[in-house]
Image (cartoon, rainbow, N blue to C red; front, top):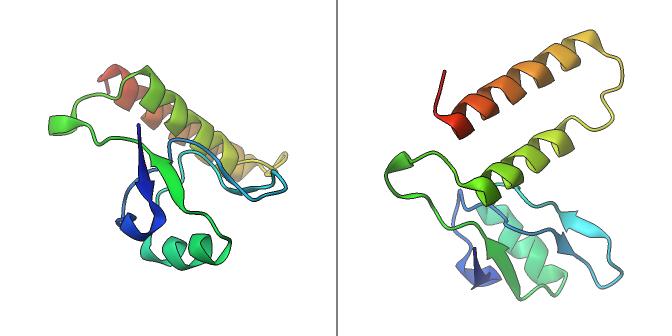
Length: 106
């Protein structure tokens, strides 16, 4: 994990920590994949720096911290989907894919 200036955000970087406003409300959750549009939004809210995940060399399996960030991001994406059977199936498939990435097994 490293801290970078919001102005230095590059497409595809992943947040290592939640970004919150002055009131503590989460603006962007840990695990969010950043895009150029986030720079303007974060600067407009007065955010100067963010913590991002260091890229993994050579596509190696993620370490425990990276795996945890990915898991939290996945769970965040499926919050509020309730008992929708299709969304539960997609969620389960996404978890299985994430688990195979972490363990390096298919």
